[in-house]
Image 1 (cartoon, rainbow, N blue to C red):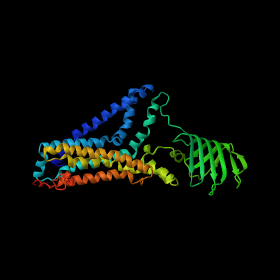
Image 2: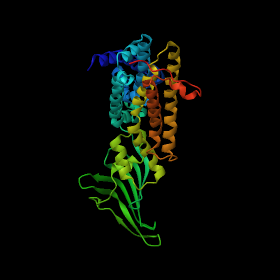
Image 3: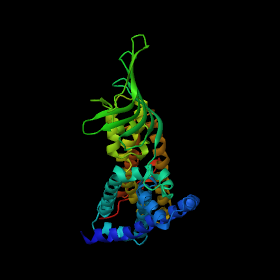
Image 4: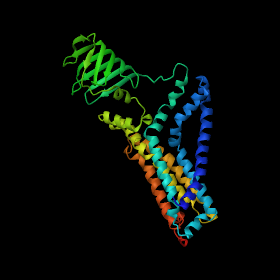
Length: 388
């Protein structure tokens, strides 16, 4: 690494750590003041509270944009400070282009995007998924208890089966109070299964119904015969349903990891497009959201470099305005994608594509020693590029 790269990175890293750490500290104070009564009610100890916030850290860094905001503020501060000291002009007059000066910072943006992609693959969604139940589990006697889904209905359109489950625990192969309706292709009821328990064998991929009966129906829809289930259980081989597939239709897509979202879409391909849209949108967002770090760098880097004291405040305001405007735009487009109003795989990418485009235009203007605001001036005259 050259001396120039080390100096630029050293000037950036200290304010980046301060800005990111300060943002996390402020968030912790506000969040703790909001949840302090909940912690008191469940009698949470200090290690439990600290563990809770450690589990929420990936979601804070990514979904609350702590890393992206830290990058933006640190770049604006470090580059504007170097500009005020005429260090940027000195580097350019020494033969270094603006792109060369910013190269290590652009590399930081790529690395932070890769790090956020790793977080968004599994850790951040899981943190968001357990946020509502994590405090309740701190209560004595509730440690390790998982949420229970009750009165759940699952429709297998491919095999014309409808399941009603009285009680199921996500991750368990044991269902309680099962009622299965098997229909023909034309919608006529063929048979119904009633069982107090249903056990799934992952190795054989078969179901065993315990303590119940089977009702067979005529073509007219009347009950023909009924059979009690044998004491050893009734085996249903080669059924495509699995406990995870049945329970997943009740899961919030915001708390599912990339493998889980892919498994859900692969298992429930027969679901209506509107029902699958939130899962498709969140899967696309897992890959699109990390680009926010690179967007922050591309916006802040060219606007942080100013060649006159008069333009510092204007550049800082423009960078903050552009970045802040992209955040509500992301939420709006995500909502349209989840509602199937826009293509779910495209909607999460749109604000990031727009942000990257704006950043590249700003970088091109700054690399040619021009002010980006000249785009809005009809009679603007481009300044003479600096020597070197």
